Length: 84
Picture 1 (spheres, rainbow, N blue to C red):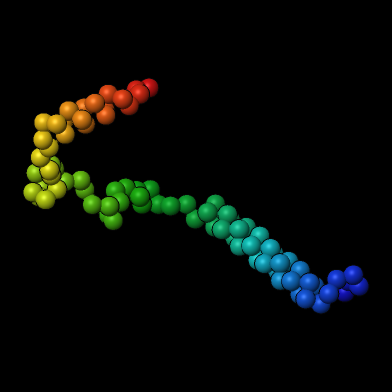
Picture 2 (picture 1 turned 120 degrees about the vertical axis):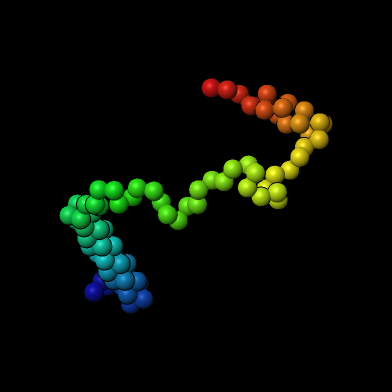
């Protein structure tokens, strides 16, 4: 034990050391698993959790008619966006 630090500081240091060791071991385990277990071909083809985009006429609540002034304001806003 260190004579220059208190018991609480020694306990804190030990906890940090144990946490660091557990983190390093876990990281090494994760990396070795990713090298050993390659995903099967086609495992990520098409994500089933993301729904397909619907057309513009899917539901009347999903579209809004703009007035002529709103259309002009939107067109002006689009013109201010710099193109690359």
